[in-house]
Length: 223
Image (tube, rainbow, N blue to C red):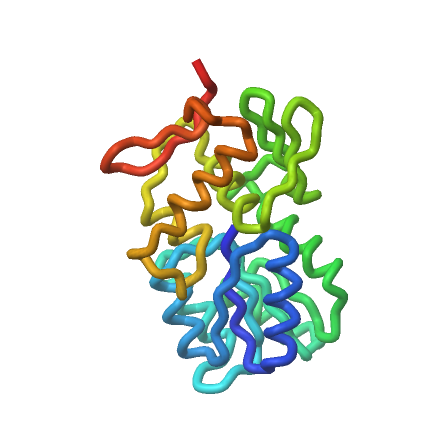
């Protein structure tokens, strides 16, 4: 899943990025409200972490612009303010939840997963196909009950394919949802990761992850 962090404190931003990447999220960053608003409105994210007090544009304004652009992904505010009126304002401008600084990463992750489970973007905790099981909450993959070692990027790639099971996923969609904005669209990184994933899943005959010429890839039950 792909997350946008809009936070002007570089230390907090870096800790969040590293912690979320360790939890198998793909992360983009913005250090001010103007950039955060632009990225959120022009890219596809599963969730936005948004600081309230930001340079160039306040978090509440950023949230309003995201909603006015028709974006429905969850927005979770991170704020030093703990007054009821401030919380009400955050929720009224389109936020889904808020967390008061300082906070524990475990609580943040729990709140994020709760938002991602909401019906608008309902996600199963365990994704299955054939003899493969992917546990999103534990970052584990099993084949016939035996755990497989996948890199964080391979795990995220497999999770996205499984969330779109039996549907063709384009190269552009994979770059948008699995890789960050710095990914080179002309490189063969997707092909290389698909190749490695097939090897680890034992999909040597390409019956599980199928290439669809000119369109992308599809994960499907082997015939």
